[in-house]
Length: 619
Image (cartoon, rainbow, N blue to C red; front, side, top):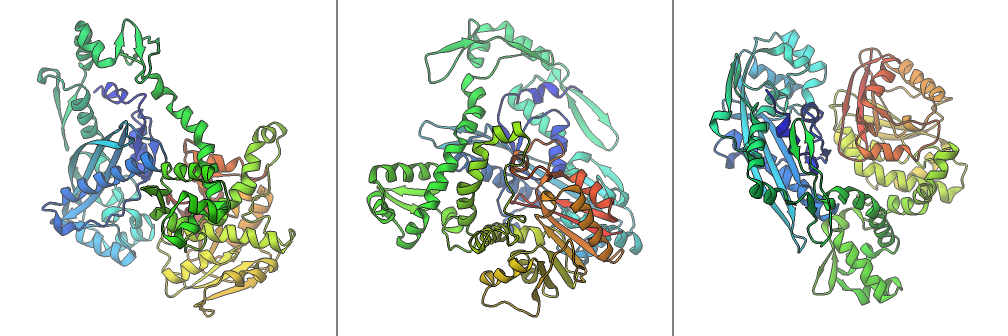
């Protein structure tokens, strides 16, 4: 079956997958599709009772995920994608939708219901084609579909059920199982597309692409029947369809925008040589030059967008608008003691970046700005933005020298500068930066795994206690001890809320390299590991491992986890600013590191936030 020509039709397009699922990423990567990953922020809160069939819910959720990413990239990132792919997989039993289990008991109830029965797995898929109009409005064309696969479970014993639940695998999967991993041992038979159960119906997706780009005649489709798999349409003669196009030169050239070997670039009178190239035996025309250069233009302009945000934040533009609601450029300029003309340019740039709104020459904050950019907002990024402007910016300015000389550009603020050696003002600012970034990501970290069975935790290097506060608020039975240097603990009181429950959240001074670790069921290392040289890291992990009870104690780590192919930029860019002895790691590298120190049952969760989460249990 030759599906590659179908996938090749997406070559040269900006394709975005609106999903953080590593399984969907693997399925699409394995067939050669090149794409960016931008996880959707759409909250899956659709009212299921509004849909007459479960698959309609999955399709609508997939559509909303894709549209949210398309709109966000167009407005906020200024990167209009060509195609956004959204997907949502659900498990249904007797038309009841089984969500991801929220704890072990819920997982047990789900899997018990599925035991010995046949259920359906639906994946809804939305393919959103995006076009930016002349007025900068986003136009979308949506194609959606769904795939159903029947799965039958064997009769499951109590021991098998709990062994599987204790592995931790059910907790982040619809229906409470993953067929491609340990969950495969629960399955007796599969009728339909196996990859659909994994998370993405590749065969149906490729057929949709063929309908969109080829629309082949019926005589070109060969149906092949396999046991337990529906008919597969093989497009082995698609090259003939392309060949037919070449026989009608006027039509073909009109569609491809090619005239006498010259590629016309839309919006300009210029032209460039346009030499056809062969891909998988198919003649392809290079995309327009503007499409080719779009990525480079985005990179070239990226620093300008950052500096615009930095300037607006430093001048507290968002604070002024939050206080007054809406102001004209002249009024804002007066409040920040700045040039009216220059202030108006700054405000218009913020509007274009999606940070402000403008109506009849009056500016106001967007919801995004009120939530994250106002300095006193509960989840404000203000401190970290200013830190990026005042410190990180200069290190990237001299990045070429750093690389040539082979030295670390700076000591990161996250742990090493918060050591009491830089004076109280610097230390306090460092703690504010850490506090604001951890408040943003803390909830995703503490809810990435079910930690409800632990009654005590020790946050090693926990600083202001931002992560500890979230842990206490999420799990009513847990008590947390924040263990950090005396200089840090001394300043930590500045960050505590009025309703601090000192019975459940305590602060202890100490050095986790030198002193005995406080006893706990769960140890936490947040933004510690990446900054340590191997010798110190191994020493610390040995201490944590020795303090853990085999089979019971857990270790929760919050760090950026690199993707295995090292294609996602954020972690790699962050690695440029850590010291020479530090290191960002992939999931495989973290697993190997933790296994070497006596941990197993290692799980990794990509949160889509500033930090990812890793969980392991002492072997």
